[in-house]
View 1 (cartoon, rainbow, N blue to C red):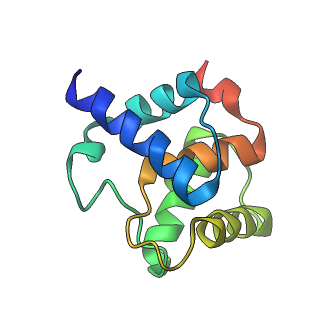
View 2: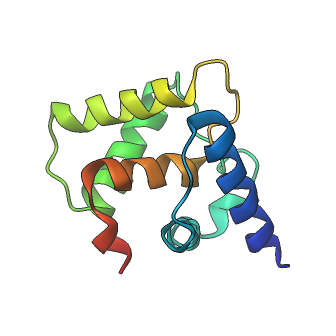
View 3: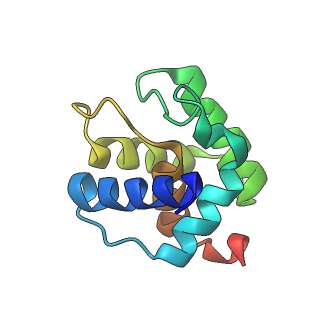
Amino acid sequence: MSKRDDLIAKYAADMKAKLGVDADMDLLTKVVIGCGPSIYNADSETVAGSDRTELDRVKTNFLIRKLGLSDGPALDEAISKVMTDYGSANRNKYRPVIYYMLTKHFGKEAAYA
């Protein structure tokens, strides 16, 4: 298996263990590919849930630019819900998992078609 395949398996296992979600592996793979080389760097692979700047970056770069959503309180609420569901005790909140959950939350799977 390639390094990317190993990471996809790790993210799927993380989703099952921490969120109780069985990942749509096709969508998860597309989300991981969409994250590009950031998944290979330990710092950029994760999202700091307590860092407002980081959460704003997720909103601007992913929700608005990638998924084409309009800015508004619904975006912040969705990010907050995903972070809460992931759990504050979990230090490693993986970017692809957060992106996957936000994509599912907004029903924007077509952005990865």
